[in-house]
Image 1: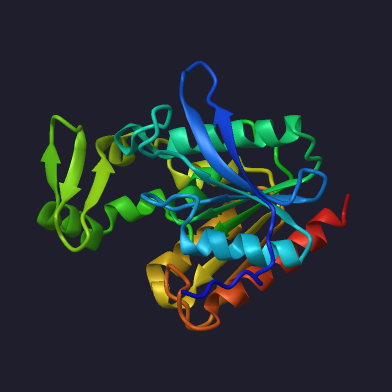
Image 2 (image 1 turned 30 degrees about the horizontal axis):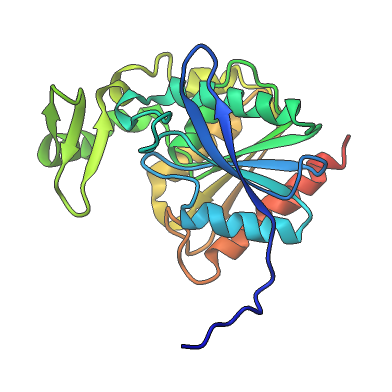
Length: 262
């Protein structure tokens, strides 16, 4: 058997971030170091730190001299949260915890990037202690009232009291905490109006008119500088040829423009 050992070794370090007032931790992977501008990469609901969109982002950002910390909010580790205990407010609180951890480690400029559900959670941040935000095809609480969303929940999911969650055996299977659909007041629009961090809003053009409208709502409601961009030909996971590269280039160009304002 032949082994190839010519690949460049990039420095990645596993981190465990304590969650205040609990015995739990948030797992993460740091690429680069805290002396550079730092982008926190947060996955969509059901995702984790090794999702393709986050892993590839960390590699692309590294080439642009931007450090990354990609994170998992839940998992099967002894000190990791269960997804059944997760909702948008928990997501936002965890983001604030991660930002505080990064600042304590020496980061003086932090951007938080959230895909899908984590994009929505960013505007729920209470502390808003970061310097910039990027929403990648972010979810929106108005989506819970969409007729198709309600139909999908009724048709494809069953509520399991023992798990306090909705479970679907359709396709690869899904678990959605009941809290996701109940603990989100006052909603995305109200939270966006109180969000005062410069924000780049990026939509996937093939996600549909509803998602694009949600992006416009964020861009128009946030009480700070915003920019709204659509990536042509991209679907929600940005897995089409060239879509991730466009996503990352637009994002890193904007991060550099914001960090240069220091």
